[in-house]
Amino acid sequence: SGPPPLPASTLRGVDSLEWVDGGEALAYTARDGRGRPARALLHTIGSHHTEDVLLVEEEEESCSLCLSTTKDGAWLAISSHSRDSSEVRLLPATEARGATPRLVAPREAGVHYFVEGLAPNCLLLISRSARAGGGSGGGGSGGGGR
Image 1: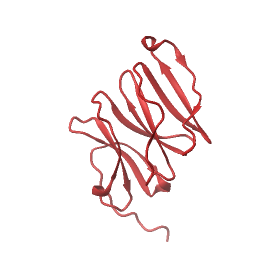
Image 2: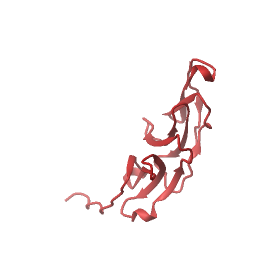
Image 3: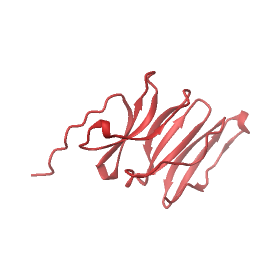
């Protein structure tokens, strides 16, 4: 007989999405009036989209948001990227509802970074442009627990 069908939910203007909370919720980015993915929201399956929770809103017009989960499945990464910088906020992927996104490191001109899960910590992968001090650097532990 199998599980009952999921209630229909319609989300418009979605740019990227990730399942969280064991498939009970969906994190997604929504586009602003200019078509830029500028808001990250959390939708509980079966609820109306007007009940979705705002996780992050990117005010900087040169930046766009995207979502990913770490390979270990522990974290939802909400990344904000521009041509010359990035910053990432993390939520526990299994307990995203009710959690507050935590900034890993503030944006710095000339520096892009990415976060990958390495239980129980996170690994930062950092790339610096020549004008920000040169070269590319390795990561280190950081951002771990809740």
